[in-house]
Length: 294
Length: 194
Image 1 (cartoon, each protein chain N blue to C red):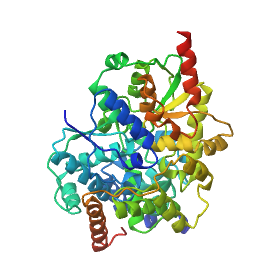
Image 2 (image 1 turned 45 degrees about the horizontal axis):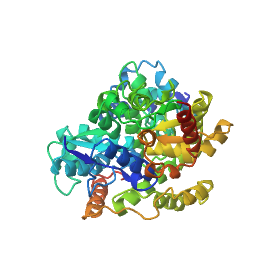
Image 3 (image 1 turned 30 degrees about the horizontal axis):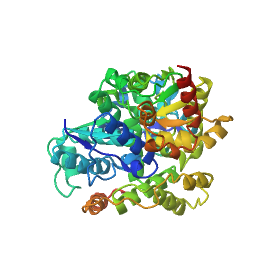
Image 4 (image 1 turned 60 degrees about the vertical axis):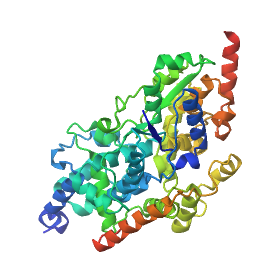
């Protein structure tokens, strides 16, 4: 399988730790991610909120590049990019829609696009859960984690192909294979407030506060995430969320790739753990203590 | 006669058809169970709940639907679509209403639209989103210079945001600017607000 890798804009800005840990974990598992050189922004929420054709045109340029470089699959770590690219590819199957989008592009887009998939699914397709267990150097036994997918990754079900749209389980499977104890987290696909943190802070603070409060009540050691915006809302904005929830949180929020990387024995620096606002030291200490026991 | 409830004057059947055509959703299938509203995470900041917006569309109450703040506060999480027993993609209906409201320059939540424009301006300039640039433009547009100032110390200490924009190489940034220019020109040509 030949992959094209689409990191998304956050990978170059607010989520360099997601990018670093994604690269490190995929490299460790022998899944080669070759970044498309001249990819552009998918337009994220602002583009589709403003106009569907504009959003599809921004996505089509990327899909076109991936198709022309002969990729069979386009992998992206970001659920927002994933959702936009998949929606665009789907809408572009309608000839009238495609004609209007093509008119916005320099040249009409390629006829067939590669399938778009999340890095998480790419990892699971590349090596099954048993293979992952064989790679473990530091078992995560004793770590209690809440997997939080956010709202985009699994919805709409027929397009995203991510299992049950309100109860996906892939992240739990991957992290359980690393030895972690996965909580049955009821808010796993609830919305964190998305990009409203800037224009309407109260919305994001309240929704993220609810998620963190439940994770804390369930005594999670950390929340595992797969989305740069969810991570920012739950980690960087954690004090705002705590204020809204009338609570105090000290909840580490790690990308699932950072947690897998720990299980593979990769160093905290190789996984960008220093970027987290809420330090992961409590996790590392717990892992050390557990390791001492066995 | 009380003008406030003159439905023959207020109802616009063409509006219902427009929304159904543009969203591809059969809004008339809705029997008002309220599942969408029950699951909506943003309902607490809505002026009308999702099922009421859908009702307004069914009745052809264009002003009620397009003038609502709710269509701007919708987070596009699709929980409503997922739980609709009639398989209406309610989130697509909300997005269609947002598009229609925008085109008619009926923006009930200017801060939200300002944020989107600020984001898209950076994409137009560099081909990729530039977070600090988005923030700066948003502050200028909305005159809210203290937005998220509480986050600044951590953002700087942890180098959370890239200080320099990422420009798409190999002429990609210019290609993106051309896409956005053509979009704008077409909107002007079709006499809708871009």
